[in-house]
Amino acid sequence: MEIFEAVKSLSSLAHETRLGIFRQLVQAGAAGLSVGEVNSAMQIPAPTLSFHLKELANAGLVTSRHEGRFIYYQANYTAMNELLAYLTENCCQGESCMPANKCKPGAKR
Image (cartoon, rainbow, N blue to C red; front, top):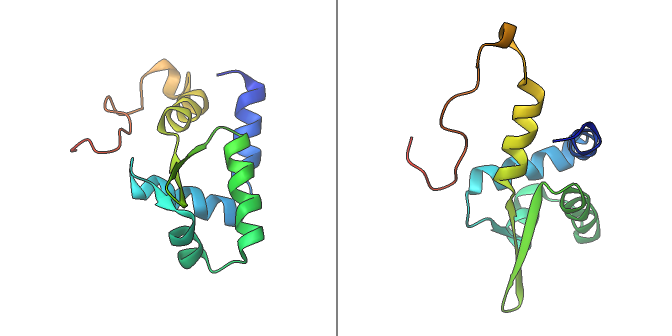
């Protein structure tokens, strides 16, 4: 990950609503959540939710898919793991401090 990508991701997460949405999607796993489910949990107007989801998508932190009339968003775990790896690169005096099993939705821990 390059510094520009890291800044873009961190900037996107530097808003309490977007951070809350992202955390919800991470917790939801690979299936993600419909826009309606995210809206029910966040209790924000639909246009505001749409704006925040667009910002997260532009940063590459979430992806979406259409299923019939519904749009589902899911966390981009690869991007999340790359950001975490970038932030912790060379920490702990060069010792690995990240767990060997990175976040993989659906994987048993």
